[in-house]
Image (cartoon, rainbow, N blue to C red; front, top):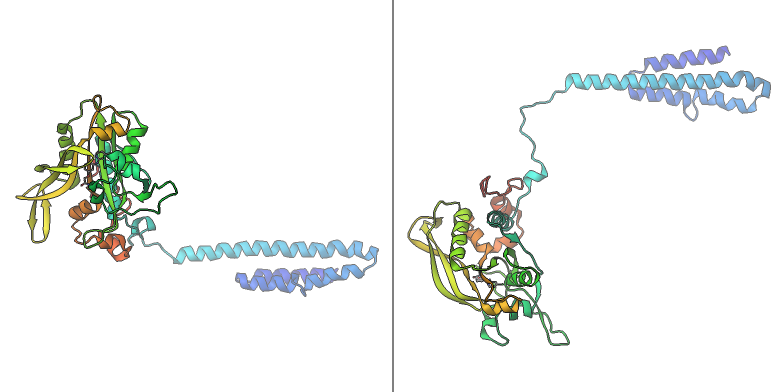
Length: 360
Ligand code: 2NL
């Protein structure tokens, strides 16, 4: 018994003397490890007679429990002391700049930014956003829009076709977002007010054309809609988008198969040493095409032209993004170059709103 008491005193003294967690671990291994002193005593229980074990068993197990309890207490005390020491020596410099989070270092692509701006402007005028598939039928992309079968108007667009199906019909990559408006007219009852932004495709590639590009089209269908409404909407759009108080517009006659009459719209601008400013100056810049929806298109989409009228317009998103943000070349838009994006991109948390300023 005195051996056990002596061993306990000895181990508890070592525990108390351990000055850090590593020293304490060494004490634990020397006592309770595989060949530790307490483990050796525990092993002797097996060879004892039952009477002997009755006396020594509780003593040896008591020793083990006392050592474990002392180790735990000392470990907690050392941990607290280490934490106190860190808190006393380390300090936080509250004057350091805030480290940027990923949400701040990422950038919104100018195309996405401009789509968000268009959405904010037209939502304020009561327009919904409609979307549709990039792969379309010949019927929705051309026929319903009054491009007659075999008509040269179809060659106005350099179309990417898929292989013909057994029945002779061909799917295609939409050449404009107008099929989304066709789908909207077929699915919804007027009044209709939608904008349709999205990807479009034409087999065309040079400095200012990429085979995939972006368009936004707008469509209004109602009883008594007329060109006066269209002109007001476009003027409000141009002022809001280019962030100017006034802008002169010029409407020139044009041709599209799906509108009659058709018009092209120029806005007033000032070209100055490679820079372009809107709402001032004597120069003109073409920004969109528009017109009254052709009665054939209304009929093809299940609407009676004697009951409903409509107008529509379309413009290139890439082009208006380049104009507004002074980007000289279209090709880097689609090259996924991080350096270009960090120069021309937008901060993700600065979402454009009319109240907050579109591009602030
Ligand atoms: C342009 C001209 C335009 C339309 C698009 C349209 C759609 C339907 C019916 C009638 Cl469903 N029109 N869209 C109308 C006029 C012009 O786009 O130069 N786009 C880049």
